[in-house]
Length: 169
Image (tube, rainbow, N blue to C red; front, top):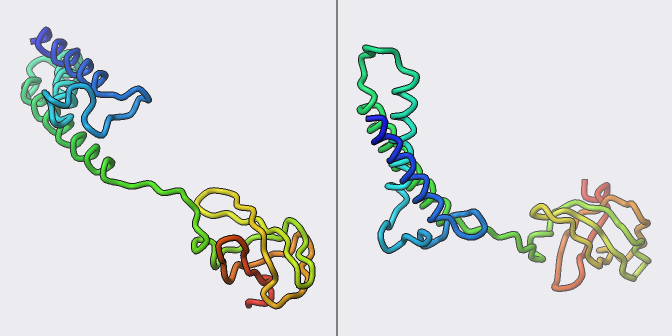
């Protein structure tokens, strides 16, 4: 039986490695074997079955109540099912790190280049994990020195309208 477990472990490992794309992640279409296997169930199931079977044979005491093949079958099935569900869920998620002007409204930051009275300056703030540096104007037209803590109250395509944090409280 050890041979069967080792063959399943090896076959599953090969199937998993062939279904990886060039960057080490899983292809959205299932990799190179998408015509033969529409889901990673068999890949992870065979690997789980083989690994669990080998470990059960090596580590379980003689005369244990549960036969290693039954435990390996259950674990392989569970691992294949869990892997296919997880990969399907991850494949449906959209990641969006694009920072839009509307994402900046209400965020706090600080003046990095002094805003002159009636003029523009620059502020820095963090949005979606990125440090943003944008031109800005004071909402009431007064000057704001460098280092002033601000909050963004409006944003158009190029310029943010800001006011000092102590004024908004």
